[in-house]
Length: 170
Image 1: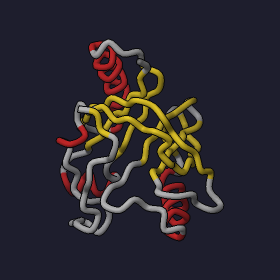
Image 2: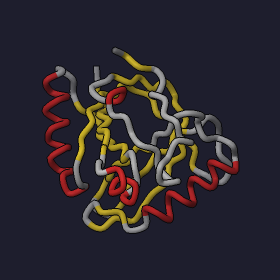
Image 3: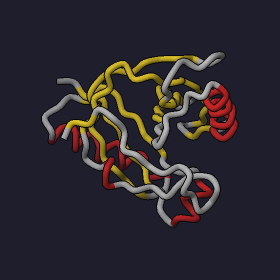
Image 4: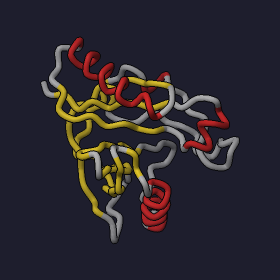
């Protein structure tokens, strides 16, 4: 099924006061089509693909998004990728331009797959996602990850769901 909108989630229903419980079903093995979707791009300093300033970056970026009243209602998406071992790029879905932020658009077709486990399994998720995309007969262009909960909330819920978004060619 081709999706042109993100699955909904109730951001107000959080047992932790932070991240809501994540339902993986509407995200797993889907095809999303982005047609100039709006995002705010932010970066982190990484050490061998491990972000060193992720919490501060998320708080700073989210404050700008909230101040601009640009947060999508009823859903959330932050795509992350590491173009180098030393820098991470993070794309926050927004509904309109955010002042004092790097506003970008993304277009393309993305295949998704949900994984569960610790961050150290990311190299396995990359390999599994490459195989999944290949099995669909599509070339892989870029790979992003949507980390659905912060580490504190993942520990509380007992699950660390991560959604791989593979940008594919036709």
